[in-house]
Length: 89
Image: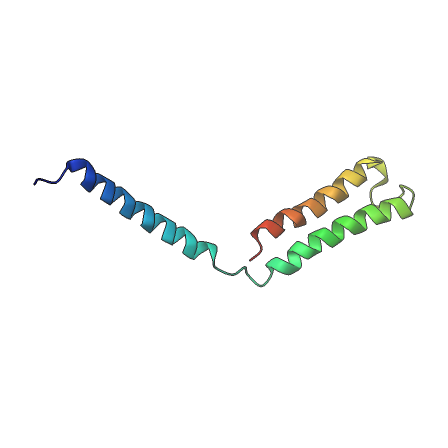
């Protein structure tokens, strides 16, 4: 009985899919660089300190001309740290 051409194409496609997934898994399991964790926590702490300084100084610090936008800047800096936690291994 002759082999169907579609079945050989399916086998080739499955082989490529397995090779792709094995390469993706290998790169996903690599550990983070040494600097990753301190930078991640640093962003979160700096963002929190930015907001605390704004409230404690009653808007005089860190940048008085920005007013309430200082809160958004503080949350933005902390949010960068939280985004980095999704890539932490």
